[in-house]
Length: 101
Image 1: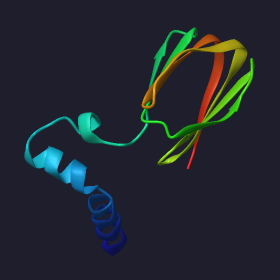
Image 2: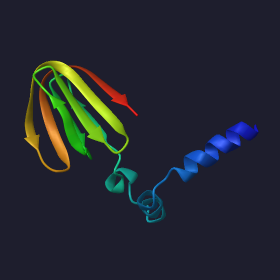
Image 3: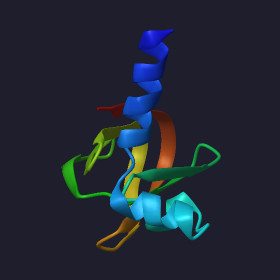
Image 4: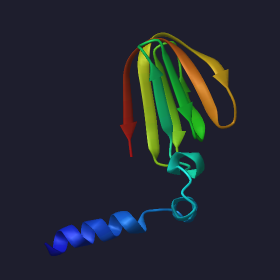
């Protein structure tokens, strides 16, 4: 039982100041969080928000750095269709998405 309380306490402490303020103001966490958000549209498109940089890019792999780890997207004929400083759209034949902390 003590271990469970400790785990819950750690989870509560892991919230950032932005996330705590958002919770108090009842703003959805994803609006203020710097955590990456990945949205897929079928197997043809991946929308990545809150990334920090591109580590590797080819027709078959895209490795993306985030504040919380590395996102690896693999597939065939992949291209970056759109890119800004905060988000990107990758299209192609998406086969797999991995997330490593």
